[in-house]
Every structure is written in C-alpha cells, then in structure tokens.
Image (tube, rainbow, N blue to C red; front, side, top):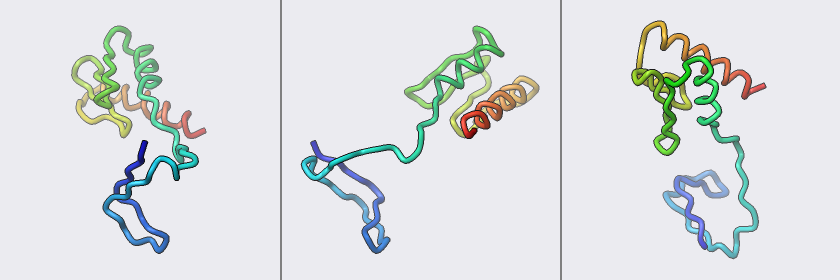
Length: 99
C-alpha cells in the first residue's frame, strides 16, 4: 500500500502539492490530534433532548429537534432558546475534552 499526502511541506518548509510514499518506506503512522468524538457529543445531547437527536456521523453533523445542526465546530444552523441550550451542552463538552 502507498500513502498520499496533500499539501505537504519539504524540509525547507516549501509547499508540495502532493507526495506519494511507497508503503515499504512508511514505518509508523500516528495521530497528532485526537479526532472529534461526534458520537459522544450526540449521546450527551440525547440526555438533554431525549429522542430528538439524530447522528449523521458519515456526514459530520448532528440534527437536534430536526432544526439545529451541530458540527465539531459548534452550531451550524438554528437559533432560539433550544439552540442556545445545545450551544451550552456543546461548550461544556468541548471544555471537558480539553481538560
């Protein structure tokens, strides 16, 4: 298997459009950053809004009450008191993840 890197940089920091590495030269792959746990956030929202939360993990968002769209960056769509409550749950979830 091979590995393709997009928007990579060389040793001097010069941008490279695409780099293809033969799998035999790749010794180890690891994550620098922990991926966002959208499922855990949806479970947290489900406790506050029972039966009103739909997780679309493959598309990267959560629907709450079929009118509030939440992504890993926060509320993408929706307004009003329910959206404010969702935002509070989101902010608490983010602060706990950072701790």
